[in-house]
Amino acid sequence: MKNVALITGASSGIGLELAKIHASKGGDLVLVARREDEMNKLKSELEAKYSIQVKVFKSDLSQPGAAKVLAERLSEANIQIDVLMNNAGFGGHGLFHERNIEQDMEMIRLNAMALTELTHFIIPQMIQRGKGRILNTASSAAFMPGPLQAVYFATKAYVVSFSQAIHHELKPFGISVTALCPGPVKTGFEKTAGLEGVDLFKMALSPAHTAKKGYRGMEKARMIVFDQNLLTFSVNWIIPFVPRKMLLKMIEKMQTIK
Ligand SMILES: NC(=O)c1ccc[n+]([C@@H]2O[C@H](COP(=O)([O-])OP(=O)(O)OC[C@H]3O[C@@H](n4cnc5c(N)ncnc54)[C@H](OP(=O)(O)O)[C@@H]3O)[C@@H](O)[C@H]2O)c1
Image (tube, rainbow, N blue to C red; front, side):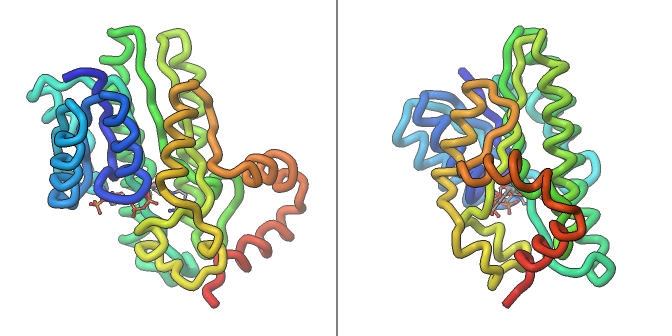
């Protein structure tokens, strides 16, 4: 296989669009998610359109140890990863103390732990080759606390912090790490997170747009990439200067279901 990109959460939304972009550049793919049928559909479509190879690995990455098992399966299949896109993730709405704690723990395991573990297992082969690209799908939620989505916002803050730190560590090895920080995007995310009816999603962008921004940012080895200019401005020039209590009220209002 050549110029292989492993994409988690490749069965829909942003991950599926990232797969299309990588395929259009002639790169091979390893698709990872739980819905095998969706990934096989994408595999057939992309292999018919481009002269590339696509491998599908069904995995529930929220299960403890799943990332390690995936890395072992890749090694057994002799597949080396050039580009790692940690994109699988989900959110969940509600007051933290009233939410199902198991769902929140699953969210932490997927959004933060699996991403960390998989990255750990893939980096050594990139170091050996002296190059590699990593794209972690975080969120603009990473830059503020999120009442009514407390755990989700916290997992994304983790992803941004972790990504920046290892971007710095890995620079001497020729490896870049980019955190993609989208605003609302029209995908399955809204329904899974129980956010239908939240006004914010009226301004949602297409996953194709967000994926394009992320992929381009990764190619340029950017550390942080937003999918809207307004977000870049808000995160850098508004949010840091708004008093915390006021910010918390604003975010709570934005997450409220009408
Ligand atoms: N949409 C937004 O507004 C938005 C905004 C900011 C950030 N994001 C982030 O963007 C990323 C992609 O989400 P999306 O918007 O494209 O939503 P999506 O369409 O729901 O895609 C989520 C992907 O993650 C996979 N996934 C979920 N649970 C999994 C598990 N346990 N194991 C393996 N894969 C799993 C899903 O595949 P299966 O169900 O087949 O497993 C799916 O491919 C997420 O990290 C999300 O937090 C989204």
